[in-house]
Length: 228
Image 1 (cartoon, rainbow, N blue to C red):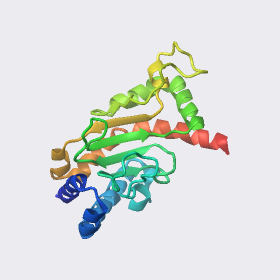
Image 2: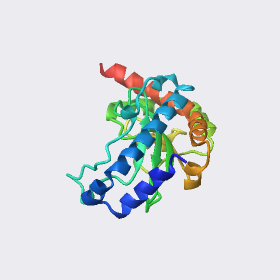
Image 3: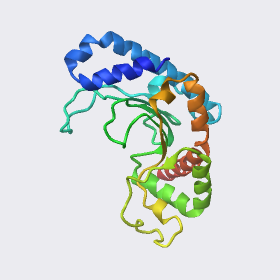
């Protein structure tokens, strides 16, 4: 399968996270990177079939460098031990909500692992306010979109202790108003990654999250227009 080599590479990189090992295995990394880019290209096309806002993106618009930025981190290991593709309108740095496919075979926490995710993180304040106004006005519609995304759950690990200033504490959507990230997530197993038909199965799961993404991006677009 096309992900076996990817998983094997990252498992070994996790155990040998040094420049020396990476340099000695650079030809394999080049192959793995190419495989993942091919998969990302097909995933973009698959998602564009139900969400035309991502049409025309290239794999490099949606993938990341493997080198870690260690300047401000106590962890000085030079490489990421995971690989991911973030497929969002205008690409990974646009600030729009999108679809995220993540492979991390040796995650030692439950926070990250092999994962499908859909939504927005690291949201700037003006945009976050717009999303919260959307929650206040259309909370029932958002809840329905979350229910439609069977197998996903709304991630609530990054949230305020109380409802933010300027929003009603007694809102039926109080818990959602406290969120600082807005994304759905679904852990996936290695079996999921290695079984035949990975692309089609991944596209089908992401398809269920499209109504949630559309609501978020409507609010995000509105904030960007207001900021002009």
